[in-house]
Length: 349
Ligand SMILES: [Zn+2]
Image (spheres, rainbow, N blue to C red):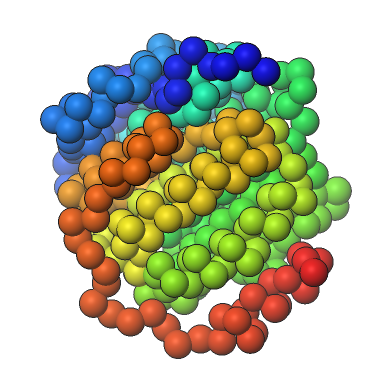
C-alpha cells in the first residue's frame, strides 16, 4: 500500500454553526470553542483540510427513509423540533446533510490514501438518529451513512464503529442490528439516556454477535475503561478484522461533563484514543476516523479534541489540566463477574 500524502485530515464547514439554539447544550459554541483552541495551539496548521460537502440524497437514503428526509426539510423551514430534545433552524437541513457528507468526504480521503486517518469536526451529532426519526440532538446518523458508503469501496468488506460517548448510540445500533459486516461496540452509562444498550443486546439474525454493549455504572472511569476495553474490545475487534474503524467520539464521559455521569479523565480519554489508534494500526493499516458526537463542557472538549488529534498525528504531548474525578470509581466485581459475563456472551476465550 502506498504511503498516504498526509498523516491526519479533518473536515469542518461553517454551515454547522447555523444550526444553533442558545441555551441548548448542543449549540454552536462547542465547535467555535474547539476551533479557536486548535488554532491558538497551532494544531489546525498541522492537519490537512478535506473539502466539506453535502451528502447526496442517495447517500442519506442508505440509512434514512424518504419520508424522514422530507420531514427534516419541512420542520427545518419552520424551526420545529424533531423530538423533545432535537431542535431545528432554517439551516439545519443543510447543516445535517453537510455533516453526513463531510464525514463521507473524510472517509473517502482515508480510503483513497490522501490521508492516513482523520478527525471530523461535525455538528449536529449523529449516533442517536434513527432511520425514521431524529433524536437526542441528532438529525442524520453521520457515522452510519459514512460506513454504508465506505462499504461500497472495493476491498472494504467489514467496518467497526466504536462509540465511547456517555450515551448509548441507539441509532447506530438500530441501523446495523442485523448486519454481520458492521461491528458496533458501545461503552456507555447504563441505565441512562436513551435507555437502550443492555449487555444482552448483541444484534439479531445474521448480525447476532456484531453488536457489543458495555453498559457501565455511574462514575466508572479510567480504571474500569482500561479493563473493559483491554479484555473485551481488543479481542473482539481482532477477531472481526475490520477494514476501517469509525469512532463515535463523544467526550461527555468526562467527569466534568454537565450531561454525563461517568468518571473518565482526559488522561483516560488519551489512553482510550491511543488504544483505538493502535488497534487500527494493527488490523486495518491505521484507517481510523474520530467523529465528534457529544461533549458539553467546553474547556474539556477543547483539550480532548486537541489530544485526539495529537494522538492521530503520532504526537505524545497530550495534556490533562483537570486531573482525575474526586469521586472513586464504583466498587464492582468487574474482574470476577462483569468481564466473565461479557466474555461468555461474546464467546471469547
Ligand atoms: Zn452523549
